[in-house]
Image (cartoon, rainbow, N blue to C red; front, side):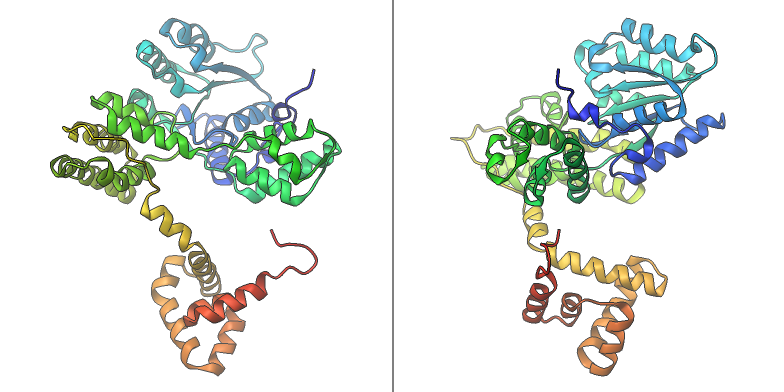
Length: 427
């Protein structure tokens, strides 16, 4: 029987967890508070897209530190009785030998948030209140209204998509261990296809390996293409066609983008989906109210306000439609996303320059952008001698210098020279 590579190469130590270093450190700090017997929060909620190491981190920590791990998948244990029988008893009693420490891992806790699970969440809340051992909850989408009562009791630790280069590096190690010949072009394609999901990337690599020990570009056709945008389009259909707030609100469950990003999708598509001016006016009013909540969330980090922002932006828009459209209208990418894609190169240059200024001048990137960048740009444009010294001091590349002097033609030429491959293509 072939062992799935996601299990075969699952991290056995915390140091083997790929990416999300800030989340890993936050988890270690929380567990350290348990080790010292003074946890501010008795439970931690690890949340983020699938395949980024949430569950693997908890399992690796338990193995490395000698914890007795009680692992439960919440989607399989929905009722209050089952939750109490498994989680409740485990959090109150010691291990059989009375020596080892215990940790409870409740995976897919957002899967317990259905209508039939009315007693499940209160049972988990009760377990958190009474627990004498750390409880780790794992969820893709922690913002369901039903999870609100336990969310405030948990240390919230966010995991993000894993960077493509980290995925490629990990896949390369697996190829070496499995004796596979696989070019960087194939690894890059698999990593890009995964969209930051390491688990899916490993599964794809294992699927490709079934064709033989040598994997090249022609083998890639064996993989089906994942189109996560389809999930967003399905959610948009649910928002604009729902008849109740509850139905529209449910569109955000298990959606692999944050509510703020989904807000932009709704906002940009509303004018095309709501052709009646009165319907559109009502929808834009609701979206404006939701935007106020998002602004306060970003400014004050009051994530609890999502319980108001999300139903307003989904249910409010759904209830705004009074007239049925004549036919289907295609959805489109938000203008903000298209703009970010178009300006990606410029933003990368700017961030690189700000990082170098901040490092050399011992200041934040924000201060570097507001207090230093305008002066540096002015000097580079108007003082040739000083420009050479400043370029040397700040270690500016030719593209970065061209960006600061505002000469797009030279920037493009310098960029081509800087990225021209020597021995091998740059990653």
